[in-house]
Length: 109
View: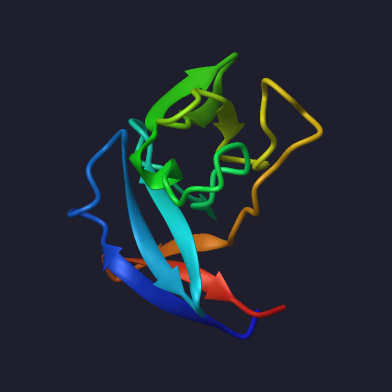
């Protein structure tokens, strides 16, 4: 890990909602689930080609936190990035943490 980019305040990230952040030129969808956990995945919906996953519907499937694309409703795991409806398709997952009240996304390898 080369570093961490602060993207928003933890308190400003509403439960069950997403926000989009630009991290090293890539759009990253950042979510806070109902239990307070934060997740970061790529914002690009691979089915539509639109940067919209941050506006998706947050939920769970068999206990796993998920987001459903707002366009075609495919469901992605917030843990693995895998599309639970079509497992051969996935989106990137980014390291994420909360430090001193700031949500930070990891950069580099």
